[in-house]
Image (cartoon, rainbow, N blue to C red):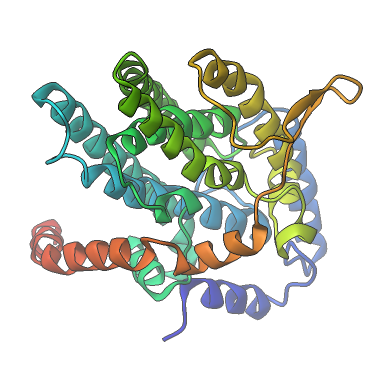
Length: 336
């Protein structure tokens, strides 16, 4: 069975398209010029507006990956709901898991409107996830061995997500920008919740402090990878130039990573923690952080579902999806 993305490519070719945008008439060229004028003027593109094919496909890949990452990203913390150290912490983690699932469903709904020309829906996206054709963020393939990991996810992973997502609050695609308004507001609370876990542990025993450092050491490379490669030469592919061109976002992967360093390196050091990279320093001449590159070959393996917990989390999601199929069937019949 062909994946959604194979069908998208076939759709573009069937339109007689060439180059990135699939233009084959003077009318299309005029529409593209008008489209670019609109986004340059800060107008929002809506789902039923004309858009170039590569804009639509870039949005589908970006938003579907974001949506699936929200859903799959709830699973590492879900593992700590029964093991959280207090009822207060259990309630906090449970609320966060529910929020993330809600974010995912909201984003998949946004994606569905973009999928309409292909006759596809979120069910097709879910199958692509299970088949390995739709990726989710590298950090959510990682193990959550300790309670400190739950804190690191909330504090630093969600903190990294806020940096990238707030940059897209003014994205040229209106439905995505509006969805991000709600998502970013809730992610701020998630980051605060994670930070409160870390702060409590830093004020605890020597064993608890050591647990945070050990967690940071394990998560450091994954955090650097979160923002993606600096260029397509690093891993063989990158859509950042296209997303900037179409004003979906305004910064590169490396600019996001540098913003993360600016915000979190001082905070990490203030807690008495050590950055697990002895080469890391701020280069005053170039006004940027110098650091050891993560293993991008490992990154490529992880996003191919070869990470430490890839199989287990995908299997859990697959079982849940199949178990709840009766709910989807009942809802589809009630709509008819």
